[in-house]
Image (cartoon, rainbow, N blue to C red; front, side, top):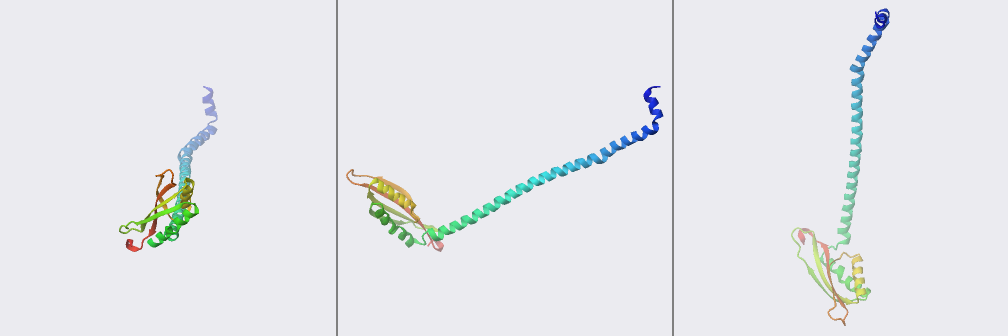
Length: 191
């Protein structure tokens, strides 16, 4: 008889309940504890995914609020531009440059030579009209540069479309031709 068989026979009352307990523990682990652990890990993964989705939704909400605030600000600035900067009609657009150009020429020591207006016909359903102005000046180069700078930085809404600088005769001052545009609001139906 071997030692193991002898121990099993003599201590059977102690070993059998111990073996049954180990089997029950393994069964309880396999049937109860392990599935609950898997379920708990799945819940933790879902919680992490939910937290990430919440962060993404908060970032999207912040972005949407910023977009809405930017759109509101752009609408306000555009309304201010239409109401306060842009001339109300064609006569207002002409007045905008009529006195301004000779005054700028005088301020910058440039000789004002000529000005021609050309009102482009408005297209159907247009909201704005365009007034083209062709002006001619003469003077020294530095004065002409200062005139252009003053015109660009003036509060009046005038766009410089083209600049032509020429000196047909070396004995005479430079000739500056500016093609300018300004826009004005049209009434309903482009009138």
